[in-house]
Length: 328
Image (cartoon, rainbow, N blue to C red):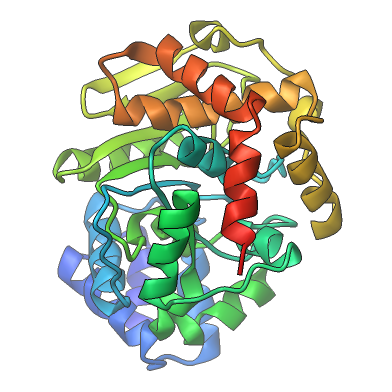
């Protein structure tokens, strides 16, 4: 590891094969805590290459507990790590997408660099995490959405999770999270915290069989914030869009500010699903859900996707999907 850290700090990159092996060794606990912590944070000081990202991803997927669903499931998630502390847009959007008819296999975890991740949120409401495939399938049949708490499907990462929590900052695992859904979804919306990472994701996904949308708001959000223009990459190429292209208003950062605590975040989350969200909060949720639905049906266009997402939220169907997921 000493040699690898030296190379990385000197801005030399790893081959795909070396990156793959390092991740396997990390998972097995081969390195001491200091080495592991240093390796996890070094990619915040130097850029990750496509080969490194691919090597890490492939190792994570090989080590995971895979889940196979009969339906063409979709994941809706972001890397996190943008430092913006917004409302839980990807989680809210997941329920809207499920309510609009697209089955969702949501991959999530506890917040590391934010107050409340998707796992914190659902756990607060009493959801019991499981890696039982039959239970997950029943959730999908009942609510059109299931939730997969990442640590249960990536047991090899148990050596890394405590270090991530203690560090409390984004690491290269933030970059990997959306890529390593154990359901191997064929459809995916991913928000990323940098434009460079969006390009790298776009390159890797173009060489896969996925229907995808990778997006990044140009003012730094790993989602459609509606506070600026955003860039997105899809199977059809790349494009910059404005909030007006979705027929939605431009917002201020304070309009989509998240809670300081898990309790705060949960209250905002439930208010939105129950129809008590502000116009700005609703618009941000609709924007992200619409981009996911656009990924599923690009031919109908952005406006049709926005209309579909709006109906799923405003009708209460998204709230109903949430209630059905929470049934034990």
